[in-house]
Amino acid sequence: MVRTWSYTRVLPENFISRPLRQLLTDWLIPSHLVHDLRINQRVLVNGHYRSMNQTVIGGDTLLLTFVPEDFKEPFPAVDPDSAATVSVIYETADLLIVNKTRGSKTHPNQPDERGTTLNHVAAYLGPDEPGPYILSRLDQETTGALMMTKTPAVVPIMVRNIAEKRVQRTYLAWVHGNLNGTGTFTGPIGRDLTDKRKRQVNGDHAQPAITHYTVLDHQPGATLVRLWLETGRTHQLRVHLAHSGHALVGDPLYGPDGRTALRLHCWQLAFPQPFTLDDKRTTVTAPIPADFSDFQLFET
Image 1 (cartoon, rainbow, N blue to C red):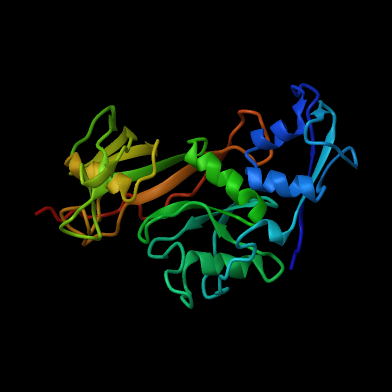
Image 2 (cartoon, rainbow, N blue to C red; image 1 turned 90 degrees about the vertical axis):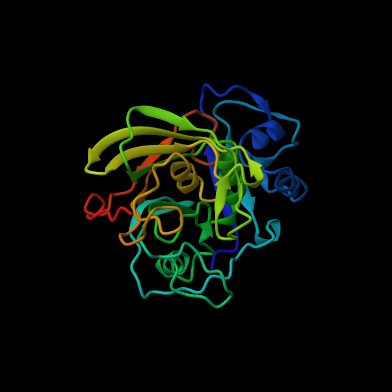
């Protein structure tokens, strides 16, 4: 298994010079990791260690080396399970995005649990990779793009990108009723004190939640919408749509019935690459399930 993780980056010629410490901070490397790189001289500029206060310029080559001791959990305890094949839709040396199937849990909830997407990805990566490390989560019946990392070094960077809304998640969903145009749901979401499984608008300890939608298509009794999130509250899409009177088709918890499968698909992820400063985003699209638009409503 890999015991160190090294990253080489050549700064572009148009790079705006700045102190080395500032560059590492701008790359979203946490301060404790910057400290470890400094005191152990594991950040080199053009092959030599430099003070963190010295300036780096365009054309400089940086080499960063991380070791397991830099991280609280460098090797996550995920049992590999090869019982199912994972559909990989994007992969680099650091990042992995799979197209999660309906009915597959994202990750184990018990120490010895197997059969989840995370277990299947661990089998796919094999024993020489330390990961996977989960970055995003999807409910068990939700399909689509699920992001993970293969190394611990990029976990805090991508977590920060998610927290600061530089990762955009776009969903497709069939909802009950006739919805038109575009709009935004802004109801704060908190716990439902009558059902611990659920959340509700203006519930207990409600937090701000913002969901945007655009209508794409209709069929009798249902509307196809594209949804994108500014926040990531538990069950946010499901709660906002149900509160609007347009619950997700097949939602057993918030909808009028659950006799058809949930029609919610994480369609696209757009995100910056780690150790970069530009505004470019990589966009990854998850193929839509073949039966996504094939369902029968059972209105009550």
